[in-house]
Image (tube, rainbow, N blue to C red; front, side, top):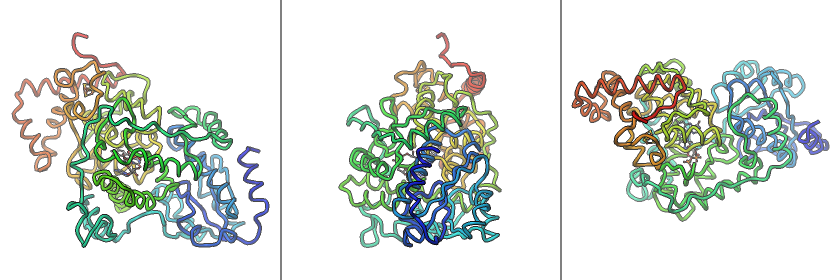
Length: 517
Ligand SMILES: Cc1cc2nc3c(=O)[nH]c(=O)nc-3n(C[C@H](O)[C@H](O)[C@H](O)COP(=O)(O)OP(=O)(O)OC[C@H]3O[C@@H](n4cnc5c(N)ncnc54)[C@H](O)[C@@H]3O)c2cc1C
Ligand code: SF4
């Protein structure tokens, strides 16, 4: 028996008596939400399921698999310590539904908080229909369907949703008006960062026997999954989650606002908090992090900037995903991107574009990169190249530790690639090298020169030319389209030629170099 199995057996051996059972999904690991928060622990039992079928549905980054499993196992031990009975099931290649049906014979009907992932909701629906499971509300969200319905749509806009929620909750509001005179301080979130103030080093966590065992399991059973496994960077226990959040609040938050959009080779996260993997597992609760930030002494651009991300964007994308059934019945490729994802995204072989290579390396090393690198390097490059939005989305889904369908699909399909058009964003988030050179130090180590030889600017013009008709009438992109019209036929032909060359070289896994190198 594993050390975890033996420790759990010992911790639960004295827990007897009749129990009301709850199935706790892999991303609902908190006892301050749902029935675990409301009922006495000695009357409750929880079922947790590790499923290889789920873990191999995609080739998830090893760090993500380890993160989920070690948190589930530690949560099981923490609940046993509180007196909650625990059934921790290794379902092997079995899925959640079959495992729960089998348990139903013995434990009777179980409650489950409404799953966040559509994939899991779909799988469990027949069990809800048959009375094996009973759904109860998920207590971990900050906003309601009514908040979302109030903004009308589609199309939906995050700004309207955020305003609605600020007004309804009174967060950062004074006498019905936004604190500081405006709802968003976005314009104060765009400073470049050149190393000062220094970015805080990442916290590390004790690798206990449970985490060690999980890491060995991942290396053994998921050996063909990509990504580096870094056990010391796995927050695993409730205390680790607290420590990560204390680090974010004390070390990152004061500079979070001004440098939110900056990118650097010197730090993967700069002043970003890295809390998304734990927020999405509900190891940290969004209400708690928002409350702490509201109560802290912080500049307004940091305070409002963070609240906008968690109370605004995070909740908004979840509602859009649910309201559209994961975009299932929509055209998910409005710009007709049909290019296969180039092999450079899988790491190992550089593209010669220093910005892309750097972020790809970061992701395979850490299962993380911050928002602007996701949007303006990976998403931007994918969109400019005309990569299939579905392929890019699926890549993000396996590569990042915080990726689940409800959050990765809106962010990639809808926001980064404009795959579903104007449904939740007003324009494609595309840019040439000027933006990257302004907001990062990547160009300093690149064989290309951002103003002279960088192919990304050519790709940008080529993208606009290829999509001019589809984007015609979109006021947010009207200015670049007007500039496109001023480009000579020769320039346009050159843009298309460079675009074709980049696509061909990247598809073949060859490294790009400036002419003459
Ligand atoms: C192409 C692309 C893919 C993304 N994929 C994911 C994903 O799979 N999972 C995920 O959680 N986030 C995703 N995001 C949103 C965002 O990039 C990450 O939440 C953030 O980078 C996480 O790092 P952090 O905790 O250091 O964030 P911080 O910058 O410190 O922000 C604080 C928190 O705000 C929330 N947040 C901010 N923006 C968003 C957003 N657009 N959607 C949802 N939550 C947001 C997150 O919970 C984050 O932890 C994606 C964004 C883009 C552009
Ligand atoms: S020069 Fe171009 S390719 Fe190189 S890092 Fe800068 S933006 Fe990226």
